[in-house]
Length: 80
Image (cartoon, rainbow, N blue to C red; front, side, top):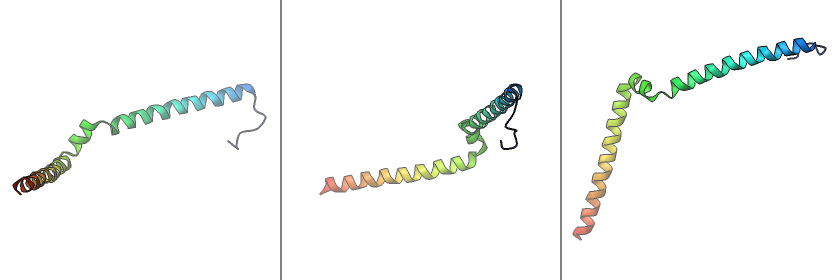
């Protein structure tokens, strides 16, 4: 804002404030649009379906292995 003269008229100041408000409104709407797009998990899932399926398969394998190992340890302890 150093390029603005120090002796602006009230009308120039009002005009500058109004222009800033318009810019801010545009920026807020743009940000809202981007946040909505980013947080749309259905679209993200559809766009990355293969990666999501691979991740789910690996997670299932790891969790299943952990559950199986836990039950195996519990059975061994009961058998003693």
